[in-house]
Structures are given as structure tokens and as C-alpha cells.
Amino acid sequence: MAILILLVGVVPSPECPRDIFPNINIPVVSVIWTCRGSRPRQMEKRFVTVCERAMTTTVNDIDHIESQRYNGVAVIKVFFHEGAKLKRA
Image (cartoon, rainbow, N blue to C red; front, side, top):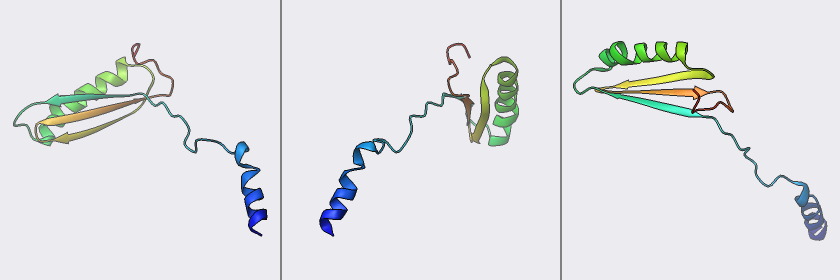
């Protein structure tokens, strides 16, 4: 039984893929705004909303945008479609 298990395990191993995770290249650009003393709601009104609207109308190949706001800091992550040229965007 042990020899059978060994043969069944060794024979198909060359045909198995080497990497179980595919190579994924999703281009992401992060934009960070800082303004000391600003609350998250103020960061959203002053920077995040304006920047997101500007990017959606002027930058190509955007898949989606995520943003997070903290005290004095706003982080906007722009996710592009796979294969998008970041220099061009």
C-alpha cells in the first residue's frame, strides 16, 4: 500500500503546476494628502472629493478608486485595469 501511494504521488507531480498563485500585476497608485489639524470630514471635502472627480475625468484606464480619511491625512488608492500603462495614465 505504501509503494502504491508513493507511485501515485510521484508520477503525476511533474504535471502539477509549480506555483499555486498566478502572477497578478494590478497597477495601483496612492495619492496622499496631508493637512495638519484637519478632521476627516474636512479632508474629504477639501481634497478627496475634488481629487477623485478630477482623476475620473482626466485619467484613463481606472478600474476603481478607494479612499480613507484620518485626522490630517487622506489616502486615495487608484486601481487601474490590468496592463494599463502607469506612465501614460
